[in-house]
Image 1 (cartoon, one colour):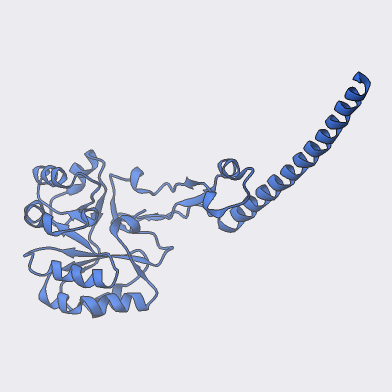
Image 2: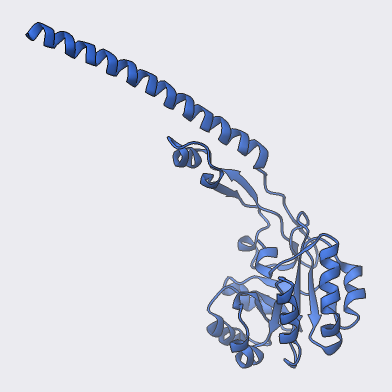
Length: 265
């Protein structure tokens, strides 16, 4: 009886060993397919940082690179199979990025993507809400430039606080502005006040106005439209009447109108 039992156990072990060997081979082949798929995906979609440039007016931001993290991606997919949604990335940051340049004015976003940002310079407060409503109906994000007094007056009327930029005349105004919003903002040099000095200490980036439109919004936009530009628009009845046609024109040229945060990634 022991002899038969021993033979039977040996037979079972042989069957199990054969099954396990095949299973290991299958898993190994599957994992090799995953690795090959990850490598191919990385070859197709990885891109290195494309640096911006420094001018006498300020900096033009670069476009950070993006690389597939092969080890983490493989770990996510092991035993499952290749799935694009399980890909993990690591950023290849440019030298000319926001975090490294608080001491320099930003004058535009990167010149590699067809993105632009429109900023309404709020003055009286009479027209900007109507301008925002028009842009919202077109699924387009506009940004708003305000001082502290205007922000304090209209903050409850604004749904998206992440697209609000600061203009002002003093450090006290800046501090009060930050207390209201409690999130990332940008400072904008709009007068003789060197706003960058106070904003740099708070690790807030500063923007210098290079393109400002008082009137003739559509015609003026046609002249300056380019990749990465930040277009500041005076809040006025005339520009309200042309904002819809201007947005349509920009989109018709293949540009995307984005938030200031998306433009200055």
